[in-house]
Amino acid sequence: MNRFDVALAGAGYGALTIVPELSLSVSGGEVMVLLGSNGAGKTTSLRAVVGTVRTRNRSVRLDGEDLSPLSAWQLARRAIAFVPDGARCFANARVIDNLTGALEALKPKVMPAERKRLFDRVFDLFPILHERRRQLAGSMSGGQRQMLAISRALMIEPRVMILDEPSAGLAPKLVEEVFEALGRIKAASGCAILMAEQNVAAAMSIADRCLILSEGRVMLQGDIDDVRNDERLRVAYLGL
Amino acid sequence: MTLASVAQAVLLSLTVAGLYAAIAAGLTLTVGVTRIINFAHGEFVMLGAFLTYFLFNQHGVSPWIGMVVSGVVIGLFSALVYRVFLARVLKHDEHNQLLATLGLSILLVNIAIILWSPDPRVMQAPQLLPALQLGGVTVPGNNLVVAGVGGLLFLALQYIMRHTRYGTQMRFASDDAELAMHCGINVDRIFELSFVIGGVAAGVAGGLVALILYVHPVVGLDLVIRAFAIITLGGLGNIPGALIGAAILALAEGLTSTFVPHGGSFGYGIAFLLLLLVLVIWPNGLFGKQAHS
Image (cartoon, rainbow over the protein chains, first blue to last red):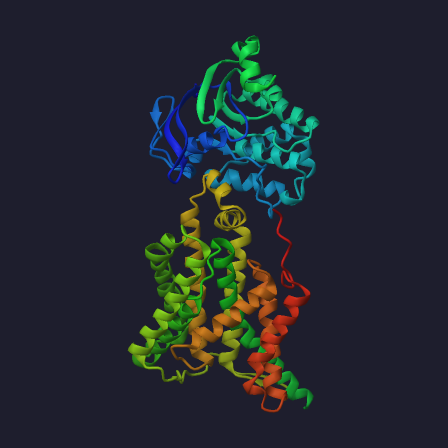
């Protein structure tokens, strides 16, 4: 079922509060996108969710189970995957080792059949990674590293996937490819997807719901169609 | 300068390289993974040397066993140092870490001076292996032990890093600690583990020190400076690089002190001249790869 509920208060750095209050829910098979301009608090919100940004209050629930006390690495062990911005990879390890390492960090004794199924899935999604599997991750292009970052998250069979600007720095062709893959993940895996995006058009292509942030405040939370159909909203917050 | 004397000097230098490699490989693993410049690594070696020395001289424990005991004790000591001391410092900036480990180094040296006096001691250990005779060249048995155990330690560290799950996690944490955390890796535990592995290597290396060098409170200072030179030569975090760096340094030192008149007093200096030259020409070390960002 994978229903993910989050409530945050007072997220920020040091004495500075960036996002005073935010709460959201995403269900399995659903994509929620955080929209907003640079500095609106999207990254801060996502990082507060996974616990790497301090909050005054933070509640994280997966299918009702309270995961609030867990830290970032423990959330990953509960199948909540976070893909930070910047297409980050373990640059000095090969593509295949990035994937194997992520898998074995969680499941040291994974069965060969299971291993094959997981590898087949990501290579089916991104055939280029299979081609480049023996290459050092750091020597690949930004688009390929983003595909690897998403694949690495898939290796833990996430129930929730949190992505920070997967389109950032990618050529339009690759943005399309990455979002098409995210659409397939959404349809096939039953995991709940929460992501921040600045590329509104790309985000809207797969999102079911959206949350618009402006200067740390939630301006709107609702169905993607509400935004699509409301010209005033689009002009005010999305510049469309 | 005869062929035999050159061969003798080269072989002896290579046995010393085994000691340097063991110390440098542990240090490069710890520093490469945690990014803490651990000046106290030399004092871990010094404590291991004293432990092996006292076990032999006061209790008649064979240095073979002494080395193992030193490895275990110093490994545990490293875990303690990491938990009560470095884990806290890690959260602050790098200058503080540097000062903290330097402070720890000075503290340990001075505790050793108070407890055991600054006088150098000789273990007077029996030769643990028969000497190696090759033509006119003799390599004493304990030098063979140093080369062999140093080489084994080196291989063990290399194996752990390349072929175990924990090695992968250490390499991930070294590449990008935050990303490793988001892969479900308990980075704090992995840092501690790398520290403990470095500590075990330092403890065993301390036992080797007691076999072929004087045991005294500042023996670690000389060794850690050499180890830093070696890991700079080999590239930070590069364990095979540490082996080759150790051989180069030991050979430069050994040959200088054997064949240059009064060379014994500046063999150490020649080694660092070499280091400066390498750094001017290859700033990433001989085998340091250009890090991908």
